[in-house]
Image: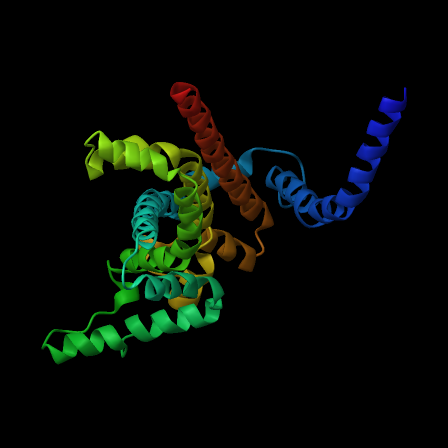
Length: 288
């Protein structure tokens, strides 16, 4: 009986500590999202529940373009970011003469405000910016970078530069938790660098790898601020993302379509996260 009372007391104490966070989460996230889902099923005039908003949304060419660009961006930028982060982390984990300089470089995007980041890239790719000055110097024509086919690559570059530092920190923590004895045994058995990479490093980095991929996928849906500040509300077609579409629906006060688009994006993110967790469980079961 005393044990049950102690457990009940511990649960009540835990709930008291969690209550402020739970209330804040409910007020600022859960309730607004539930309201948004409800709006997505309502008609603008009658407020009757219907699927017409989703039907119009899926048949909208603007939404189709925004969704295709968003998922294309995620499919390209996430693998690039994960591979580069792993390479940089492995270099920083070794004793190289420019390690301290690299550490400063990859930490810099974590502490620089977004406005400063955008200002830097504007200076680089503006019509009168650094890149066009270099092209003009070598005798080539200037390029309107953010209105050309290069705009997608520039957004990927900004995304990688902004998020690589956080991923490197995670990979470094994972690399430093791998026992050094495993590499020593592999050296005694004559294993080469490639075999040690795939047989030791990547195997023991699997939990960290899934966390990095998960965070990279979530961050890939949050490039709207940079894209909006650099290219405006109606950017080049290749970088017109779901967030641009939802922002334009907000400006036109079409809350039903905005809510439907946000709900679909949330569902897609949940599906991606569920697939990642399922893949991780399957891989762990296979390794065990």
